[in-house]
Image (tube, rainbow, N blue to C red; front, side, top):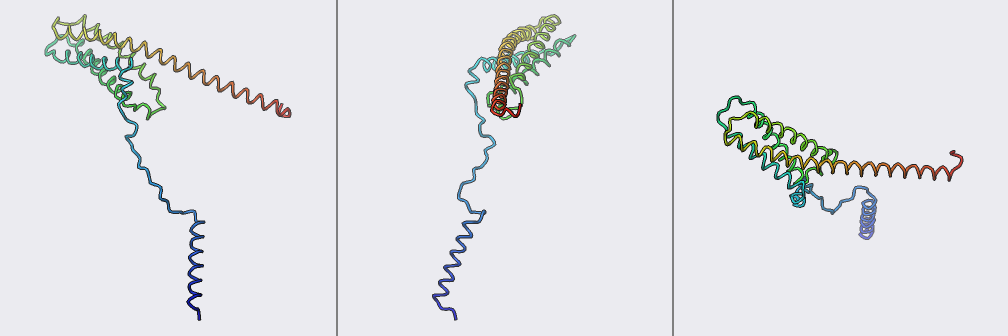
Length: 208
């Protein structure tokens, strides 16, 4: 018959065995807190961008495009209306696209999609907006009924064309500077690989 001391010893051995097996088990309980994923983490208003040349130009472009669109929308009657419709489409499109890009850059959303060349995207938008705003303003200046709304739309159209032109010039410089840095980095990486390969060949003549 098993005595009380034997039972206590058996319980102790079982407890020790359980502790050892628990210590060696790969499935250990953890007390580390599970960090919840914050989807909106990192989205903030970048005041430095708004204070930069690109941010100020973007804000001015959005405001002038909106004013030009409002001016052209106040025209009730027109004949012919081709110039009015063309300017209306260009001003609305530039306002929407430039406004979206302004929000993307201002809220640092472009950092969430790093595989997109945002400098080139901004360059294409500003260059296209410059061309179409100049063309639509020129057409409206040639085909209009000398109303106050049309004259105001033409004035704001040429103003925003100038602002888009300055932005295009700065965007081209930024894009070229970025491509130059990328090309220099690739050249440096290639030379580093060539140097490492040459050093390996010198250290191991049998590979030659």
